[in-house]
Amino acid sequence: MKIIGVNKNFDLTVDLVGSKSESNRALMICHYGGFKPRINNLSASDDTVLLNQILGTISTSTTPLTIDCHNAGTVLRFLATALAFRDGEWTLTGNDRMRQRPVGDLVDALKALGADIDYLDGIGVPPLKIHGKTAVRPIFDNIANIHVDVSNSSQFASSILLALPVVETMTSSLHLDGDLSSLPYIDMTIDVMRKYGAKVERNGREILVQPSVYQDVEYTVESDWSSASYWYEIVAFSDNGRVRLRNLHLDSIQGDAVVAQWFEQFGVKSVQDGSDVIIEKSAETLCTSSLQFDFIDHPDLYPTIAATCAGLRIEGRFTGLRNLAYKESDRVAAMTTELAKNNVFDSHNDHRIAMALAPLAMKIGAIEINNADVVSKSYPGFWEEISPLATLGRNDG
Image (tube, rainbow, N blue to C red; front, side, top):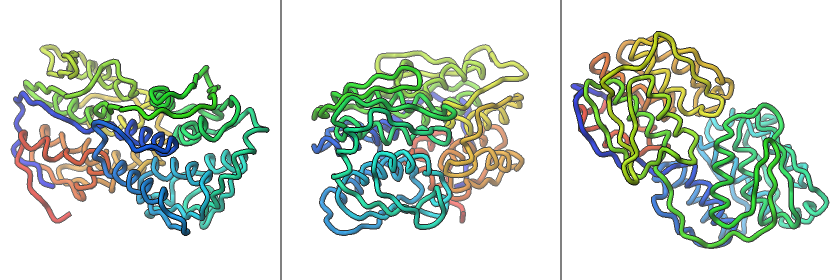
């Protein structure tokens, strides 16, 4: 993708995309509840489309299936639990990168609950052979305490949490072991579960879940705050930029809503206007010569913040980066490599790397990004949405 002739003065309205994280959780709940999803603003991201397709397939299949999750970590991890408690033979796999991403702590927790899962390649990573069986459920009757290590991913806890109301026959306690990471995503899981009628409470590292039946309700997904972060970066680089972000709330359950606070330091102010958030360049730049950010709960914001610091020539001191090595790319290494370049960048097959690098055209002029279509993983309309700001053209990458 070539980005040429960027406009630094603009007033735009952006629809964004529905939250991928909310959408995927809502789809899993509908699957466990056994009812057809009634979800407004369902994410159009590749990951959500894939999950929706797979859930439709496994609901009607009676034969062994190999399920390719590509590089969708959430999809594979959420499905691992769902398939463990469903009769059938399943092989969960993905692309080369997915087969390097950790899943061992989730498998260990599921095995402790009686699941029958084997590794087909390396220990602790996909592909997985799952011998699903509904008969595993009575084992829960003798287990009040469930432990899952979330050091590598909060998705391990969310995967099990989503299933507990319907597979457990007594109140269960799920303990979050290890280093806590991306805790807001676990709280999001709990929030979405509650909206579908589940009774669940978190007190520190302990989450209590009562057996219940998910209710068939209509659910509306909020726009995606992670995707909004790239618009904050664009406004930060502008001379006089203003963007209305539709269907977004400053008090969102999404942890990445913290980007509104963080970007105040880059001279971007946010105002709630009905169901939208308006962001614009402030008259005064509030940033200092050195800023500190902890990404332990907000790993998806790292590429955006790193690129913004680079574009504004502000020193950034970053902590909480350990789990970034397990994303679609090793994001710390990828951003370090790309920010050392001038105007031809590589996405590393990572949607967030591509979108974080795109606004740099506002600072360094025309740029190219190879494999730019990877943005469809979370924000399929990204290039169309930014087209009013610049001339876009295809390259050969």
